[in-house]
Image (tube, rainbow, N blue to C red; front, top):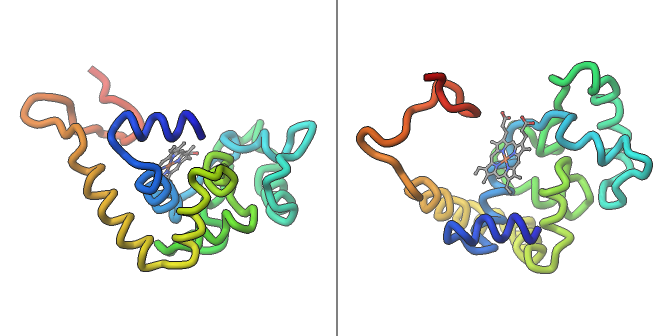
Length: 157
Ligand code: HEM
């Protein structure tokens, strides 16, 4: 959490903005088992993760070392809906990624997780503002940078 807070702070984002952005980003989409397998298949299971979720994820990811495409939804309760369920999940230990779950465990971020879990309107409002701020951060214009063909890699020369 120190690293997460530090990285967002270095770009001028507050802890509140970080929680709204990360939770908001992860209310849709999925994560590969390779990213969180250590939480459920290690010698000791991560104690912050709900045992029911561990059971479910173990089934989904059973073969993940052989099949690295295996993935789980980030918001296990409402994966296809943009809403504040992800924050309610975190309160119940239902965060799939440890960096998401940590936001409920750290006293610096927990108040915002609780606020957004209780108040969907506050979440939508704060998320919209933070997204707007992020969308104009360090924007490159003219001949600077490039429009990527794949979002996760720079274009080949
Ligand atoms: C500390 C901050 C963050 C970390 C560590 C993080 C990490 C990750 C990881 C590991 C994945 C899964 C990737 C995969 O397995 O392919 C993921 C997925 C995703 N993240 Fe984040 N993320 C962060 C912040 C954000 C923010 C700020 C947004 C947007 C506002 C966002 C939006 C998404 C989305 C939409 C997906 C799902 C992608 C898909 O389904 O293809 N994330 N994130």
